[in-house]
Length: 310
Image 1: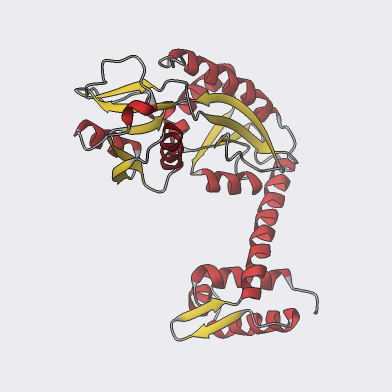
Image 2: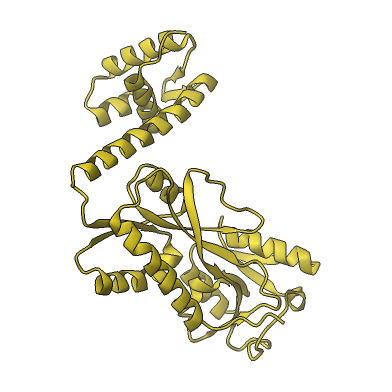
């Protein structure tokens, strides 16, 4: 096999992302013929076909899929290299780039930003909101300096290239309609909920939490609806469609017709993590922000409704 051309690898990824040679050509301001010629040269270098051409576009072969994975890593490394050069050139001096997932963005992050403005008014702060996979990619591309991530004890984040620091433990709470027979309680056990209907988040880890906790309590949950976000989930709980589980940070400001209760034993808390790229230099803005995150997370935990564990 000949040596692979890095530019053609990135071109293959562009074709895969676009779904066709024509689509990639339009995005890159090339002709379709030029794209086709470059892919053909890459196939010669690889010694294997990389694309299967069809009337409606192209499909990657198994070898093509493998190369696109490497091309994505190469793209991330090039973006990281550019970001590091920008730091050396001083283009990001005095600027802090933060990433957060939506739950933290609506709860912890505003406190962090306000406290940073008090302690370090000279810093410019930029924020990226994304879900976990997007934040991981932004960290690896050096598009953010620090990001908040999460995991659970049974599925801990495996990211040896990141420095991870736990800054909070986010308990799983129970959401009930305010007129539910259990709404006046101070704490509820999962075993008491075997006959209830449930509302879950669609394709979300909190659905896995529900399945695990119900299994431990000896029953299978009867799910009536999958909500798109926590606001919709609260609305359906208030309407009496079912009860629900949610991380405490997601329901710090619940609806007035929804009761948020701790679960006996404080099962399935998620870790809230502060992450940075291990290979990145600890720049002064990052060094200044870490203790602010720790302090604000501790203050928010103290201010939140206490969880009863017995």
